[in-house]
Image 1 (cartoon, rainbow, N blue to C red):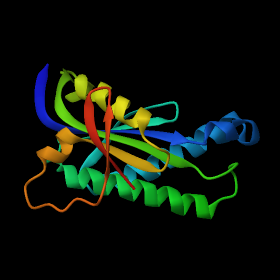
Image 2: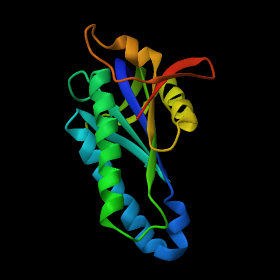
Image 3: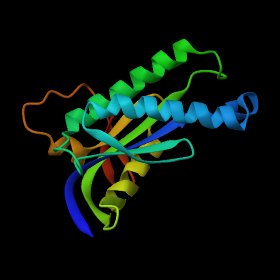
Length: 178
């Protein structure tokens, strides 16, 4: 395995989607979920982030493994673009019972990668940063983003952060952003 440092991990939870399963049916439900994940992935790709995996109604994105360094500010901008994308989606459809919202947790840290030698690709990524991102996302208010203080501290000096609300998640200092 190879270790990579300063990797941004974004954990996204789609809220309000599963209650539409009875209305949509299994096939359309899965199709719409993949469309939404592709939409969110597109909002993040211009910031250097890429989809690592999706599981149920959650999506994990990473930045800094295959591309250049992804800054904490780029991660927050990606989260804001995802929220904007969801607002546009909510205005464009009446298929769902109420608006779909995101809960976004962002952390930074080291990850290890497994490499599939025959295919020449990374086939797995793991590290404590994933567990921390999940914790941040789990306490995030709907429609908002929570970034660990570690992410904020990793940004270069002189970057202006929007006003955030301080919080603490199982001994992880963090900021909540609109």
